[in-house]
Length: 269
Image 1 (tube, rainbow, N blue to C red):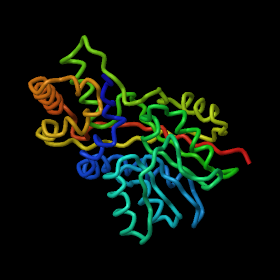
Image 2 (image 1 turned 60 degrees about the vertical axis):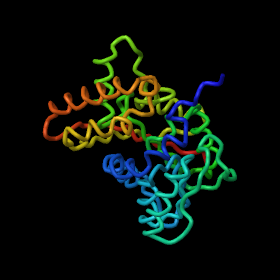
Image 3 (image 1 turned 180 degrees about the horizontal axis):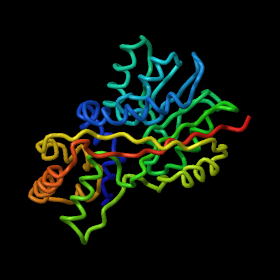
Image 4 (image 1 turned 135 degrees about the horizontal axis):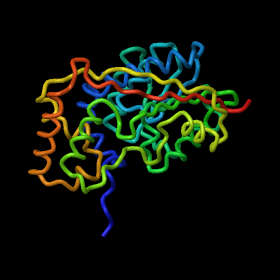
């Protein structure tokens, strides 16, 4: 019997969470997208690709910034949200369903390509890096964002700690198919696909403290991608959510501070 796909690699998982993801996760990730867009300093009209666009946080910023931008994601529900979001800024077709490991674009199609917290979750992340490199024009810019904490950011950090406390004998997986969570690791990945590293910026923002009930209601959103979550029964999931809620009661008023590394590299001219 074939094992079911990991939730993190299953479009249906992300389809089921798309609306909540847009409401909750984008409040944090949009801050990093703004920083990445400003650091990229692209000219008006640049042709821009957003790989694993999710609900379209970076895509919307790029469209608002005057780019000729398109976002791709393997989740149809995420693509619908990204398209609606971008189209309110400027009418047009801005998003499509596509596998980031096998882009349906010609070589040298884009001036810049972004992946904000997406490519590191691919089953084959280096294939994602390589596809970004392929579709960039000579001199084009790749911008890849990853979390410093291998377990994720914001509430994901707290849920990881809850899992360690409740299930100390079980492995606690990371959403990263391969670790890229340092400047050196990011630069190494860029070089593997023929890109020339330019800089890695550390960007930190707080995830604001939420009511304790949030942690009881959003365990699947923050941790549902994990194989551990899949293997828990309903009683264990309830206990897990309660442990996360107990930890949340101890959070400082500023919430959970999360650092991202935003790596930039260019395709040789």
